[in-house]
Length: 399
Image 1 (spheres, rainbow, N blue to C red):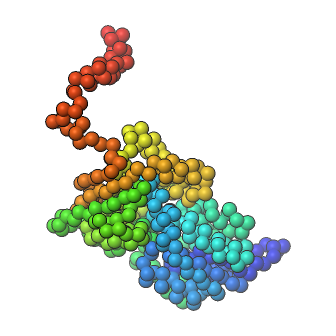
Image 2 (tube, rainbow, N blue to C red):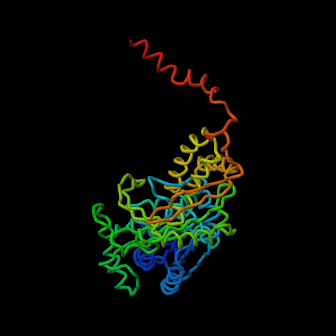
Image 3 (cartoon, rainbow, N blue to C red):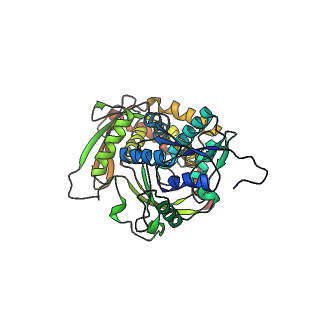
């Protein structure tokens, strides 16, 4: 609530997903914060069309003004492609939810600036990472930031009851309290008994992947890369959105891309997380494999550190940090030679590289072959004499 001397501001822009948290935020922002008008912004980053449609319908009933923004192409080009270049992964998590939040937050900011609204709201709790990812963008403006879930310290069961009392239809129930977040790159499932790290996830939580089946015939797909990003599937040129959607379908049929992990959140809390990401698994595996064919040993060793630093910034939502731009400069330069194709075998939940080729390969079949006469094996003798020289010298001194 507002303080006694604080002037009332009537409008607020809410970053809206259509789910339980952001749906109950709309009446809460009026009842508990006194706003007269709620402007909702739903950003399409590749979530199911049905979710976008349901979210739009709910917002039109609950909010005073609603915007839907199709950002799929931008999401892939400006966020996922850089992630692929960086082999983006945080503790084994492919950064699906994390990499989408700054874009969603920025679209909400854009609407607020366009309409001259000085209040920005999100539906994140005070326990997770998303509050930080949104607010890293929100707080770069001079707008007031409102976080009802965190500020009112709301529990999920209370939200379910509140939604029912206000006639808000949501798919979450006490029996299936899963919190699901989807975009084109990843699907996350949290909540309920999944919060117990010893509880085995029921098959019902999965929506993108079938249960891995050893009786299913393996399938081989070929991914073409140019400048470190995927450009073709099985020899057919495709835009990023179409290619990722297609690989999600193909990989999901083979059960590829399930992750069940205990993750270290930015706040220091450990959390059990479940994810599905078929296309991400296939593309990141293929990309890293191609890098080993075309990049030098020194580049690969250094890039491991760059990839880790980039992934941590992305996980935290700090894409505006100066270091992020510095790392991208290295990544863009290193990826100029990451051209070629990789054959990936999909089988029983696994995505395995089984072949790769590139016009920029640092690989000579002739020189490395056991049958080659191009290099004389005797030339290696001088190198071998000095290999491990200092260790041998020390061992002799100890005798």
